[in-house]
Amino acid sequence: MSPLKVACTLVLVLLLALLAFACTSLLPRGTSVTASPWAEYADARAAFDKIEPMKTTTDELKVLGFDATSGINVTLLNYTDVITRFIPSPVIAREDLEDGILQCIEAQQACQVIQYDLKKMERQRYGNFFLDFFNFSRKQESKGWSLSVLILLLDNRVIYKLWSGQPNILEYSHDKYPLGPFQNVGPSVIQQGVTGN
Image 1 (tube, rainbow, N blue to C red):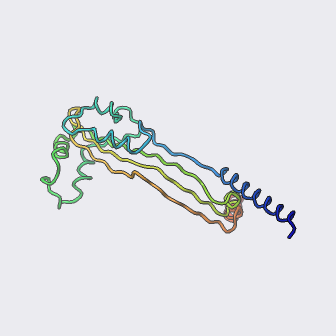
Image 2: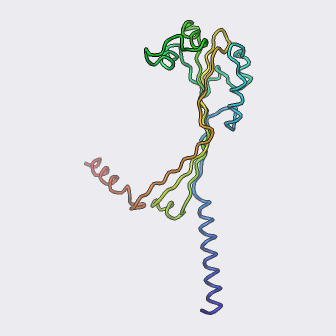
Image 3: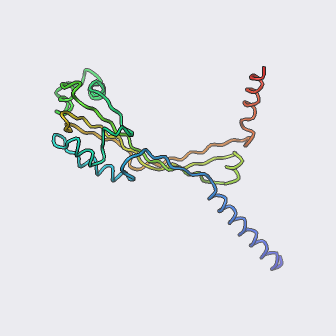
């Protein structure tokens, strides 16, 4: 093979590689964020750790970022939800429950139960641009974090707190469509025919 052909081949390969890289960057990406004062899991968890049962007041909760009155991504529950969650069966005795939970159940309507659900997810498609563009193959990476916080309040003071969460979420999905852009043509044509009749 002549040096000219080798050089042309190398240039062509380089151009194709650059094109593939550039096209990959054109794939869609997105972010799903539940509005909260914290951008990172560690910050939200650090704020939660500062809550002291039997000491922290509702005003101090607001300073920490847990504002029950704002209504943003906050679920307001009642003492019956506490019973359902912490006493799911008769096997669990009242003596096994922590003091804050018992106080809430005994106080009934006077007890405020607040649940905060915080989440941040970033989604990015990756893989072959042309396979994705023509709907033959779609690969997506999702990563982020989530935190759920339960707080029991009585007389404007925290009497119990509980958390659960996922500090590092990493998920991959890969959808294959052998017919590419024609994958959904059949069902749509049938539906149009039924509608037309």
